[in-house]
Image (cartoon, rainbow, N blue to C red; front, side, top):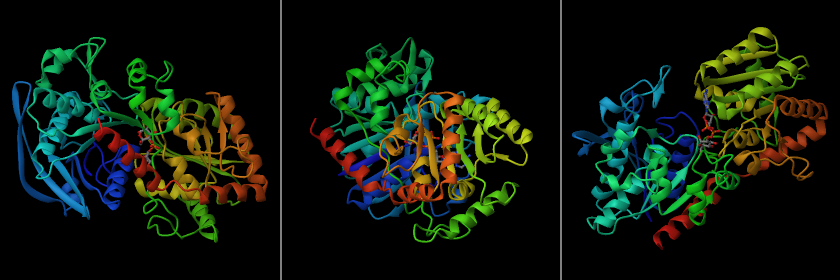
Length: 482
Ligand code: ADP
Ligand code: GLC
């Protein structure tokens, strides 16, 4: 199949979260499976300095954006056979320090930036020498793509218009803008109704995708069920219930070429199920790096996370305030909402020999934390998929997770299966429940043989992309059959 992936972030070029990992790996493994894959993504900040191998093309677009005409150049890179990435170069929109916003909040022209990006996606699909069969759009930033395609198909001006698939990575981010931004789409006002992109008087980019894409997916089976309920539906559950037959939950894969412990430039020493010595080395090195006492016998808990409401930082700090009284250590790498950054810093100030925190974004350190900790905490309020728990399993770090979304789908608690248990789950969203789960982890850590079994079960678990790409291939076939 000829597939065009549209994503506002793409590992290793740009990333704020798991979307980048997922979009990068999906493209790579679809191409490896024999598909012709094109990816389109914005050319941000200093990308060309960091990746000098990105080449100029002679493709440029001049597209209407409301009353303006905005131009962009495309750059390209072909990192593998059958895989081409196009980067949209529109310096006014994308040459910024961050992807979506700064400390002052979201960039105020995000509607312009991503309506334009979505238009570039469609323009590229029309421009490619061989017709694109499927456009796979990711999240709200590309949410308008299915609508643009549908409009062109209905207007009869795109013979063989591609079929579309939209993946929801996180329903909480919808790209909601005032109604007066809708003319940026240059579409007839007839689309701006409750049956279309209107959302209580606002324009909603994700909703456009939910209504007009041929197929919808999200990133775990459980989250696919959750988002059709009022509790997790973020006011779009009604729309999703209507599209339930076209909505599939597909658990993301892990790119084990990147996330492994045997060939990993970020780790001090390789290790594997057969030889865990390097894991002990990683722990000692991590304790040193975070300025904590180097002790193999103290259970070390870790977090790598965006510090956002979704991630359960409030119950995390509550639980740790209580649990840091016990003989444990805690390290965290993260950044995000100011109040959460303050709260986790506070923990480190009050418990200097037990908790240590780094605020910021550091890819190499995220690998070292995955490897160095004994337990990885993910107390998310909701979690569409979550990747770190799957990385933790492979790194021999036992995940402690709240049973929601992809966390529930990927981790096995002892109450579910004694033999294959690889993590600890808790259910109630409260500090008390998390503290109890941490207490269970401490007990497990003391039961050396059992702990070893959990660890080895985790390292043996397999979330490789094969299963995930096969599932997407089936979904593309269903889209083509429409
Ligand atoms: P989300 O996409 O909701 O943030 P995921 O678990 O899917 O959650 O993916 C998060 C990804 O971002 C992981 O690869 C994780 O290692 C990475 N990440 C998050 N915060 C940081 C950080 N501060 N530094 C480095 N990597 C981070
Ligand atoms: C989103 C979700 C996360 C998921 C990631 C990749 O950022 O919050 O749970 O793993 O997308 O699909």
